[in-house]
Length: 112
Length: 112
Image 1 (tube, rainbow over the protein chains, first blue to last red):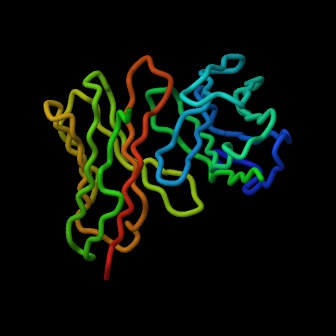
Image 2: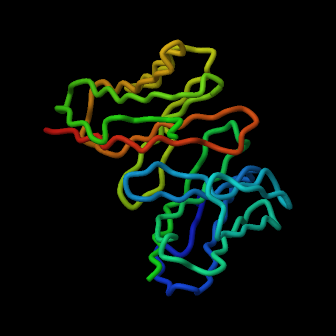
């Protein structure tokens, strides 16, 4: 039972490059979300989706895009990477917004 | 301004004793409160939760207490074990909101 799978685990980008962080879940959850965690900070919500075809912004959406074409996948795109986007990114899924969230292992991104 | 505060960045407890982790929140409308545990290089895992209509929830060695008048919740771990050493995040949820709001976390260290 894979749960929530994130790839890659580590990534180094140059300023201005773009990339996509992948997230897939096999629990048939409707709600998926992306968080970032910075040193000494809690997790902050970037974008979320309540079902296929529906996405919305969280607390810190600038510089990121998402799409939800299937229930299983919720990729996060960095359009033009900036050093301020150096962080650990977590994808999560849950049955609904009010349910306990299951997190992936995280992607550690460094932008130089 | 932080809506969820965990004022102790770290806590050291002897094995076998009680660990008490605290969390304060500012929004009296929060409906649901959760605790997550996080090991290094892993995603957070759900530990225990409590609805705003309750004041206590117990699951094995873990008990969460909610004091709505003080806008305070706490997590009690009895007895503490070495495997409990981790970062613990308090999170809150407002029905109709977009996702979880996390505190900054408390690093619990269980000493032998």
